[in-house]
Image 1 (cartoon, helix red, strand yellow):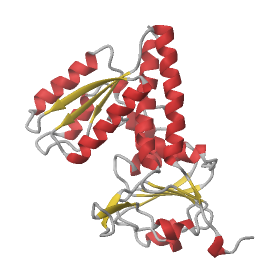
Image 2: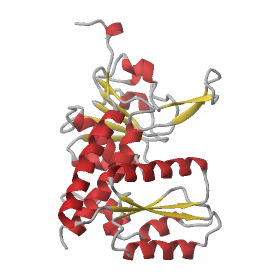
Image 3: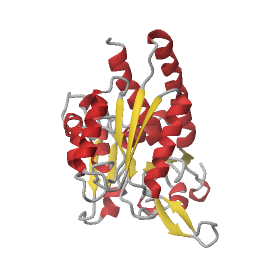
Length: 300
């Protein structure tokens, strides 16, 4: 038996797993095209020119191109009226070649995010954020049409790494609508016993230490220490935080919500940041678009 100091966690390579999934999607897109003469279509709507949003969007559009998915690019100015954005969404809802609609968040302050998201057709909600999709996710025995991309990616990483979820204790750190809450519901659907740790939780360390599976999505750089992790636990780190690093050209580097170096000495499996959950989010978006397209194309 290796001593504690020699132990090192198995690194879950999100990049490699996402690449495998992309190849599977590309093969199915080719099949659809050959059999029905149609391909999946994804509309990506971006409002304004936030640097981070721009780079996410160009990444999504490039991924579509690589997989043979048709990309519909909707770029709207920062000052666009809410009514105009809604009518654009309605136009895409009615467009027969569009199988998925993604509105890049966050939206400018003058636009009501909740209102826009609920206007997206349920059948095209590839982000999985429509209240009806989340509602079905929360109910036993109901299946949403789409699962949110990042949470779906987290569970895919666990299953493709051979981590059993059923009957395990899972702790989710963070309760956002985008990751924390839906990933808790997904873990519950997969028969884990789920606890959510958030900003008002007393003694989070004691709770996290009991977890067989930790999903860290709090947005707090290196908040979870190695000593908080149960030996052999699986750690999925969703956090992406920039911290100062004078040795880098950019002046900063990205770290997760988990102290990676320390955690590696204790955990059984761990995702790196970057290169863990990130690539999976885009892969799941493409998978959702494919699933949406198949529902429509194979029915016609």
